[in-house]
Each structure stands twice: as C-alpha cells, then as structure tokens.
Length: 246
Image 1: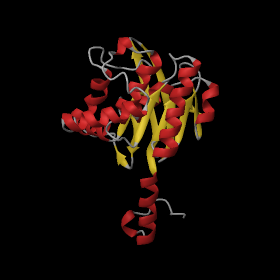
Image 2: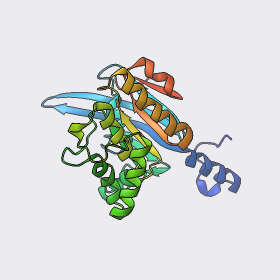
Image 3: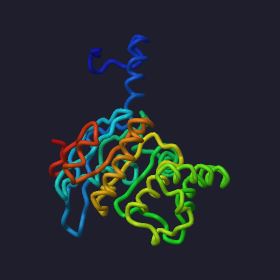
Image 4: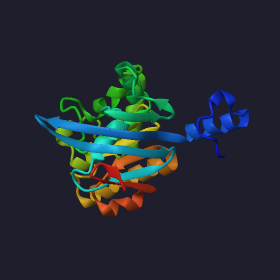
C-alpha cells in the first residue's frame, strides 16, 4: 500500500483508512525522532539522538549497546517514566508527548508493567503486599489479593507470601517484581537489565519466565541487556551506539 505524501486522511478511501487503522493497532510502541539531552552545569550530554523505532504487539525486543550508549534512557522515554526533549512517542497508537501527568499515570498503571535492575520493592511490605499495591490503586483490596496470590503461585513463590524483601534472594525478589508488573494485566512490559544482579541460574529462570509471558500470554516485552548470551531469548534486538540506532 503506497500513499502519496501529503494526502489528508479525509480523502483516503475507506479500505485504506481501515488498513492504516489495523497497522496502528498492531504497533505496541512507536517512537519518531526522539532526542534527550542531559545537563551538568555548563556541560551537556546527548543521550539520545533522533531515535526512531517501532515495536509490534507480541514482540520480545532487547535493547543492547555499550555502557553509556543510551539504552536505559531510551527505555525510560518509551515507558513514560521520562519525556524526550523532542520527538513523538505513541503507546498502542496513542500519542503520549503532551498528555497530562494524570493520563500518563493512568497508562502506566493500566497498560504497562515495569521491572528494574534493583527490584524496586518496598522494604516494609511483604511479597504479597508489594504485588497487591498497583492493583489496589485500580480496584478493591479483595480482588488485588486474589490476583497477587495467583501470580506469586505462578512464579513459584507460593510459600513466601509473608516474607519481606530482605528475607528473599535476589532471584526471588525479581520474581516478586515480575508478579507486581503483571498484576494489572499490562499489554507491554519494560525491563531494565533485570538480570544484572543475579547469578546464571537465577538469570535463566527469569528469562524463561519472560519467554513464557511473551510466547504463551502474548505480552510485548522490551528489555535492556548488556549480556550477549541473553539475546537468544528475544525475537529481535535494537542496538544503540552513542544514542543512535545502528
């Protein structure tokens, strides 16, 4: 389907409009010419330089590159945890660039899940309470507890609901973080070097869970990694060098 540049949507035939709409629905994430610069006094560092990418629904994409290449910065922009200086980001077709923070928060809670290198669990809450928290922000505590219980069972922590994060291993804490990311049934999961602090066995366990979620549950996953051996789990990789896709 080739459409001449500059043709207004109003003048497109109905079948082409429908085809365009279908394409947009299949795109989980779309970034167009996004850039991000950080300042430290009089110095500045361009972390992202006119990056454009697309991630289709159901893909498992890994972002790779050397330290300082812009991997985490890109993930944070796409995950609505930060905003680019210029450029446009769409989540499932919705332009997010100028949304009010209340709408961005709503998207983060209802459509997106997050898993971080440092787990980001609340130290004073049990495993069950950590998983329940995002669900309680959207619904009743009863429903949140049922969903959290089911997810902790699925990731193999059925005997550790009442443990605090300090009473869990690194791999177990990351499983709690995965359950928490899933509790509101997100369509997209963002994972920022989720295996960086884990040993080889725990890393493979976490990646196997991601693979299952992607292949069996159809969840789109965008993950930052610096480990070449992890790329085999993904359906595609995006490589960054000095803030650009190469």
